[in-house]
Amino acid sequence: MGRAIRTAARATLHLFMAAALAFGLYLFITVLLITAIATVAVVGAWMLPETVQLVRRIAGVKRGLTATWTGRRIPEAYQPISGTLRERLRTAVRDPGTLTDLRWMAAYYVYGAMVFLALPLWPLGLVVDGVWCGLLRRDAVVLPLITRLADVEADWSQGLLKPSPQALLASRVEELAATRAGAIAAHGAELRRVERDLHDGTQARLVALSMRIGLAQRAYDRDPEAARKLLADAQDQAEEALIELRHVVRGIHPPILTDRGLVGAVRALAATSGLEVSVRVDGLEDEDVRPPAAVEAAAYFAVAEALTNAAKYSGSRSASVALERHRTGLRALVRDEGKGGADESGEGSGLLGIRRRVAALDGTVTVTSPVGGPTVIEVELPCVW
Image (cartoon, rainbow, N blue to C red; front, side, top):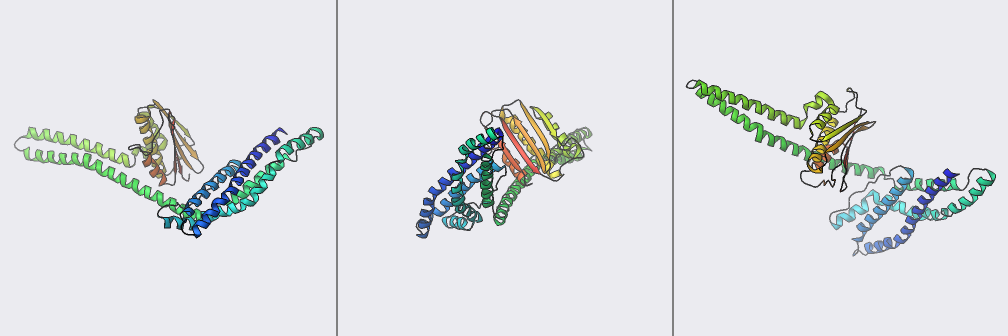
């Protein structure tokens, strides 16, 4: 009986929230009528995109309520309403998500009213099932009905709010276009960094090396001692140029990833980060179990950038790194106990670079950094094991 009461109480709360939303929709009819009249009259056409935005928010609230009850997220697939008034009107009218939301809203005016009728079942169930179970020792009959009604309401809402295949495809195309643009921008920034490093570092050292060798050739016959000194300096220049080249190559794809894998490379990062860093590994202990090279590189650079930011800005003396293998991908999580307040738009934060690199592989980055800390950067990278 106790379990039935708790489950029915949760279901009643869900139905109450659904009823409150339905009541709000009845009031929203006025907004819909005013928008329709104003749009037909042309002078108020600007109201249509704004009303569609409101409908999207209301549908988003219902998606959240339904996901809370069912535990299954309902995806959204909307085209952004932006640009000139003509463009905003065109998007608001042609977006398949608009039709989906209006269809749900029309249906909710009907089955949402039925939710009000289910609310009195809670006190009735307490009385009837209390007597039924307490005196007759039978199973509850009214309280489970409340849970079933909540399930039916959630199933209907989920079915009506689920985006159409066309909307999902359009949303996916826009997402891929955005990630492609981000990947191109990240690739361009990486090329510029390599060119800058080669021009300012390696190239300058090679030019100096060539000049010293030339001077040594000219001085060899008349001053062998000076020539030997110039050649010794040229050897030093060659070694410094090799160091510069290794640095550039390491920035493209660290050799340690190839030699020691992601786990070994991250542990090396932790040892040289300047912080006290603990590394936890789950599912990657076997050296034969490795993600694809592109995924390894993205995870490595994300961890490296996160640890660099923690050392520079967090004020923390310690951090932790977790590498976890999942059935569908890899998760990397970096946490520091610093002052928090990480700003992704801040110059030099590096978080935008992490997002672009990860998005190019269809991954996600979640940054949680409230003022006062902690800062947690979580990277999810899909891959096939």
